[in-house]
Amino acid sequence: MAIFKKKEEKIEAPKETKKEIKKEEPKEAKQPRATKGFSFAVLKAPHVTEKASDLTEKNQYVFEVWPKTNKIEIKKAVKDLYNVDAVSVKIINIHSKERRVGRTIGTKQGYKKAIVSLKKGQKIEILPR
Image 1: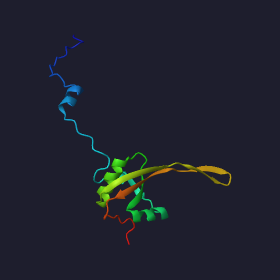
Image 2: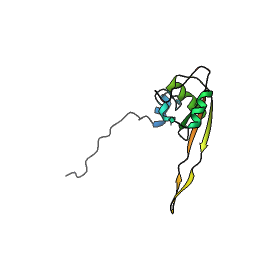
Image 3: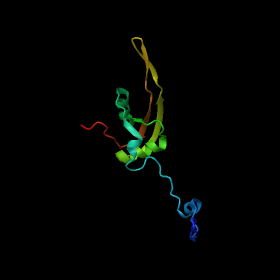
Image 4: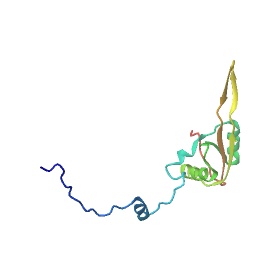
């Protein structure tokens, strides 16, 4: 009586390794963050203040932006959203400030804002009438 049975040996084709698979796939170029449809990921909202409304006379518009965005991304986002050409972009980092209510001390969150200058003759209507 046989207790152990012989296992049948199966011959398989060699499996492809992960390195070989990666070499065959073409590399895709990284797309910038500010592409069509993703401009909301760059611009938070227009910054509406008295000083910002005075700057519109000089053809400059102020926006609050996400902290990790740069000037190039902001310029592309304004072009995608408003169909205007930005001449220059200036960025200002507003630091967080300490606020106090009674004994409680807290902080007011900081943010980043961008001042965008447009070509002559172009306008952005931030607050529709």
